[in-house]
Length: 340
Image (tube, rainbow, N blue to C red; front, top):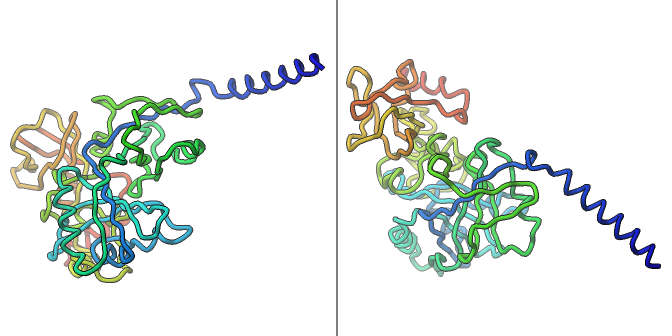
């Protein structure tokens, strides 16, 4: 009996060793895990939470309630003039009466006040869960768009909420983890490292030309389509009315969008003057965020992309780049804007 048990043990050991050897270090993907200290989670709860949010955000929240629907959506809150106030990612929960809204930490208090203003007589609770959960992001700059949610979900003991970024696969995977999570993540198929000055979420966004938060999307300064909400899955043109919908729909159907957020590459540290100009001195836009010679700027599409990618900012040369996630039919819309 002992011999049989020994042979059984050896077979199991050999099998485990073979499985372990199949995953070589060079075959593992390297990911960066970063806590989003500039983002905060807001819990919105109540029996009328769905129509409440539907009347405020640009996207269709009802998609989150479908059995086959997404786990999160990107959306914007607008003012009555159709300009962006706040950007958010809306997460569904196990309760159909509760949603989690990710927002800019600096604007959290104003954001919650904005939500409570529109409650009227609805029984809606709006609270921060900053002391319970915190948002993290897991991304891989070498394998952009690789889905890692399934790998993380295999450990069911983790009390995490995991969702691919609803804007772009390149922006990685969102993880809503308890506040006591220390950032140490071990997974069989990946190597996880902390962020660095040359590899972090902010720099990743800048290289893609995606603005986020009240500093990069200043309240009341741009329209949702200028912030690329139509390209980032952040606006529905088939849902019912919401604050700011009329002008958003008018701009969309006219096809006239003269400015958009784009990635910009700097050749020198940026000073106080963040106005982007052509080499001839014409003002073409403004930089709203920058780090390590990369930034995001709201620029005039025609003047920048029609042979004038070389620009000036604060007396130094810079270069605008067309995001590769923009649709290929964008030139036709630009021509339509000129003819109109």
